[in-house]
Image 1 (cartoon, rainbow, N blue to C red):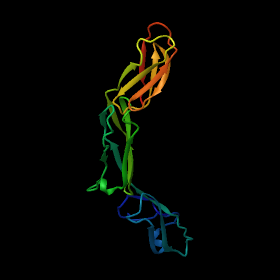
Image 2 (image 1 turned 180 degrees about the vertical axis):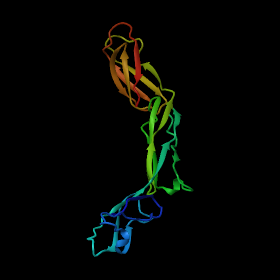
Image 3 (image 1 turned 45 degrees about the vertical axis):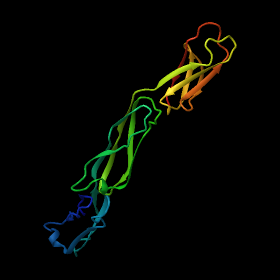
Image 4 (image 1 turned 30 degrees about the vertical axis):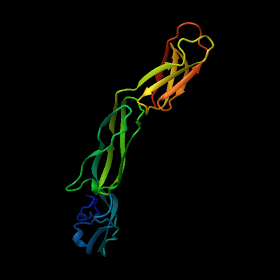
Length: 231
């Protein structure tokens, strides 16, 4: 039986050997004729994986020889690619994303990898303040087992919403248009118009503004507010 072996990607194959069972009395491997030869299809350029080790070449008049294969395990080296944390103010475009590498061997570096690194986030220019994941992918290697670790994009600051009315005061039954202006102007999404705790309606932002018109306000004083809900 060929003994199992292992090596790293790019290394030379180890010396292969075998185990014998079952000799009779005082017989040993020296009791056989011929020369034991063990080989595998794996070469120094083979990718990580399992490869059979097969043996042959020995014979005997006393034994019916059966060969059992072993396994050569070619393993990759771990490489961690971590997205670097970034931050930006609300309304600004996302910054360029980059990464840090841990695990390169010798003189290896990012240029030793295949593919193209791509890092993205769910945040857009109109996303409200808060943390957003930065995720990366796209690089490959036959030498390294790549693991990606997400980073964080922190959006700082917040939007500002101002509200104006087409009429103030107005008379009962007259249509009044409320205009909410959200800055910065790149903001998108919707604005909810409220009369106290009650929702009057929802307007969609266009060019940083959303409007809502109503003619159902009753007599009296109304506390009208506009709430920007984010992208």
